[in-house]
Each structure stands twice: as structure tokens, then as C-alpha cells.
Image (cartoon, rainbow, N blue to C red; front, side, top):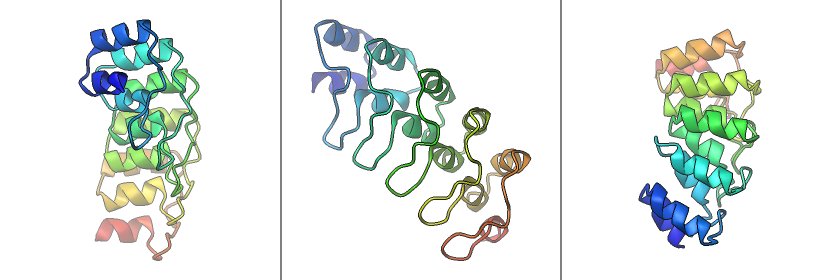
Length: 173
């Protein structure tokens, strides 16, 4: 779809022209990643704002079950996360494996994004199907600032994933 090409290229002007000419704001690529999800991973939030103005579906999911918020969180795009939360994106929308945006943000390593999601009152100890929590993911990545933020938010440090790992075990590897 031409809109997907324009969004991938980061072209606000071309995207605006296409949307004004009637392009579907919910256009998606072959993996069902929407234009909004693609825009959410870019540091310039003008495309994201443009798509939201054209009523792009905030709760849409790709083949993996991931939303635009999930993609923005994983890529550490805190401004996009803030915009999407303001547009009523679900901060606990998990992908098909149970990974939520907070877990994606913890793996991405951006503290500002993690803090925005914590402010949205997400369940800090929610676990994916593997048993991984945001704390386990941050500890495994040796992301001490994120580990500290999660602990301040009352994350439980003794939760075990399906391999029996706790945050302490994950951090020691």
C-alpha cells in the first residue's frame, strides 16, 4: 500500500497527501503491521499524530498480536508511547506469547518508556507464557536503572519463569 511505503520512508507530506486523498489510515503490510505501528517506532511523532487524526485504529494488532503501543515501547519511543496512551491504547495488550508493552519496554532498555507505562498503572508482575516478567527481562539484560524502577513499583523479585529463573538468577548470568 502506498501509505505503508510513505510511512516507512518517514514522509509526513506524502502520508498527508495520501490520507487526504482517501487512503485507509489502517493500511497494513504483509505482516499486518499497521501504518500506525510503523509510525510508532519512529522518533518523529508527526506521522503518528497524523494517523491518529485520521482515526487510525489504536488497538489494531499485527500477526504476532502486537499493537502500535507494544512496538513503540520495544523501540523506546517514549513520545509515541505517551501519544498512544493519550489516544487510549491498552497498556496491557499482550502479544500472542503474553508479552505486554512493559515487558517490551524493559527489553528495549528505555527508562522513560518504562516509567510512562508504570504511570499508566500496568500490572508490574504480569507474566508472559514463558513466565518472564518485566523485572526478569530487565535483570537478564543487566538494565539496572530499569530493574530499580520496577522494584520501586513493587515488582516481586522472587517470581520464577518456566526455567526456574528469578531476577537474581537472570542478572547473574
